Length: 399
Image (cartoon, rainbow, N blue to C red; front, side, top):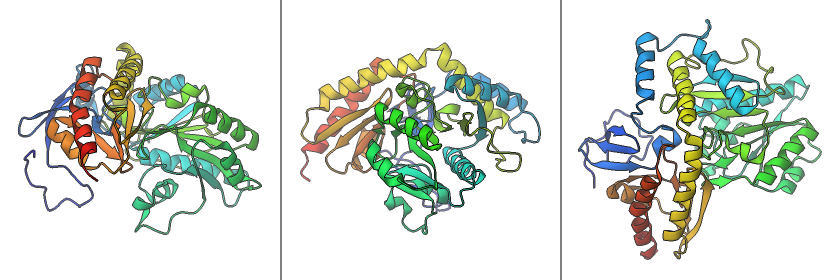
């Protein structure tokens, strides 16, 4: 067991922390306060797009910190406009709003949908959401989330949501039949916290057609699966569609807190001055981080790297553990991979940590791998070499 200083009694008891404190990192490696090295296949939960201490990112952020970290939105912020231009160019949408987290971005999307409905004269706007979804932990985003376990103790939930299963267009049509209050369909292209559950590309095209026919907003949460993680800038681009609203966060700032909502023509003009805002949103430091992250992804060919290394990693996992009894499925795209086992496997987080590997377990029985987009095939092989024995030992244990 890795030793570290005891947790302060003055921090709220909100996290089930493992017994380690990290000191510093380089590339896809981290070192704890005792000097032990770890291979990082978690990247701060899909946040550290460029790994740790990236030689192009660090000096850019140091430069920005020396100039200005925060400036409120009473004034124009040049890098905010630069980042908006870039996100519009990459997405094919038209306008962006900046905040500080994925939760905030999803909250803004919910507000957009409700105002969209009210502007059309709908008194009780209703949004379609999905089983196993995760959109955040505010009361509204928690209500949109499909996890009763994390909702418990925080009721009553916000009204105005209809929940449907994944990848079932008939279920979506049935749940919304003759309901004039529906204004939007809201989902993750690949569910992260729900267990790395991808939407099928054909299903996405069917939902896009339905939203067009019904005049609904198609709102795609790309907070975890966006920013190059699957080998395209945004995971829905594999289906060849455009959303109306796209929340982003996590990997957009490579570790600097940032969120964004990118919208197309149908939604971009809904908010007017006074309708929404964020004190920290769009601050110069976060905007510089976003601009530089995208620049480095482009310069270093990290979309292609995510696709190639992700495929290599997935194939290696299939070879080593895919045929094991108890390994149900290995799924995902690019460097967003889930390994579903046939029983709860939360203990694997600590066992992998002891072996020198950082990962997470989500949805009770899914091992989640979301490493930095800079990972090499050699490092992917090292992930498998560390992880496979841990999984084999776990599956060989009696239940």
